[in-house]
Length: 71
Image 1 (cartoon, rainbow, N blue to C red):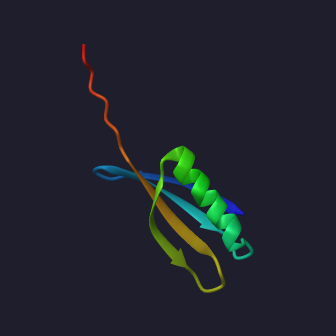
Image 2 (cartoon, rainbow, N blue to C red):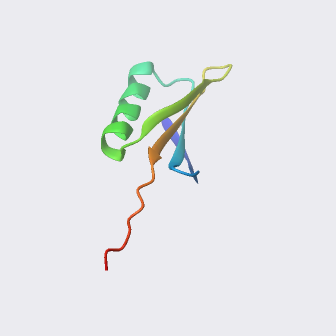
């Protein structure tokens, strides 16, 4: 299934997360994982990479919301 590399990186306005899918992961299973991340974690698809052998690496991103104190 999905293996989360826990690679959370922050750039100016976005934070990124990398999710890796093993070669045996079916497309519907990968789609289900990514849909749940988008729906509940507010992640959006930034980039995908398909390696020789079938491993998939997906970069997700979401906007960083900075809260300012009103006190």
